[in-house]
Length: 243
Ligand SMILES: [Zn+2]
Image (cartoon, rainbow, N blue to C red):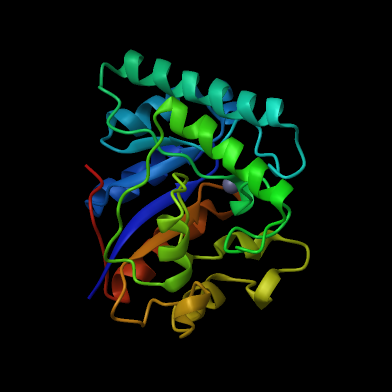
């Protein structure tokens, strides 16, 4: 058995409610990292997510690459979406349990990928500034002592408060013009689960670490949502509650 936390990125899409219902049928609680622009378009779907017992997290307003926008824009992306989430919890009459943020593309403000420690002083300063915006608003991460990957522990120990992932289901690949990693259909997504590269985000077979799994709420892959969740369960993954 493999313990994991489930996170869902992007949206809410038009199929959000059905996906929330899938998780509730399987008694799985998730953090749904939502985009401000989609919550503005479909506030009822974000509200439904909260009312159904899940957590709505902040995934920025318009999903920019944070290395390509100004610090002022970065702040606006975070703060405006934070306020929308605050309003939704109030509307739902549910106390907001915790503030969680995930960067689009895992890009925390430098052009290098998020598991990179090799920043220039300028990059380091920028990344630190954006982390400060999050911390000042009360955003937190969990201790995750049972996630044992070295890259993950290194980032956590650096004091970052944004939410990384350790396993990407990669179902988003199937609708790209050139599917990355050759992932073109559900069977390919399920096959990726058997890969054994624990320090490279493919550690479902590695018994000594918990995981943070990410799946996406994209309308193009709504039909894959439940099969992917089932695939993870069949693989022996058991999802922990956040609250
Ligand atoms: Zn995203």
